Amino acid sequence: MKEFLHTMIRVFDLEKSLAFYSMLGLKEVRRVQNEEYKFTLVFLKAPNSEALLELTYNWEQSKPYRTGRAFGHLAFSVENIYDYCAYLQSHNVTILRPPRDGYMAFIKSPDGISIELLQIGKRLVPMEPWASMKDTGTW
Image (cartoon, rainbow, N blue to C red; front, side, top):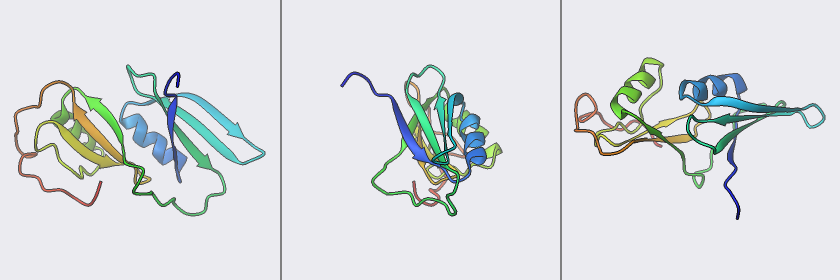
């Protein structure tokens, strides 16, 4: 194998998904529209990373996709997990697994894709409201 290129996920509402991943800091780097087969591919890139996230939008999909449990999750590093989770909450993102340990949290995309957030470097000292916050749902 030479290099890892991208991870692809199918999205039901392209604009809603683009807004979500943009809020996480990913930028669109390429878009492919296929009129014949009626789909759009949007490639996103996180700052300081070469790996791409491909959003596949099938124009005629009439209902949301089921997310398979075997998929797992996407993972992104963050400078300050507490500040980042507070930022996400201010944008109505539910923190499913709060960063009680000062190191790891989980959220989900609009399509139910689990996303792990990891603190860069050492764990932060546990602090409120995160330290006593309970899990919500599944991730």
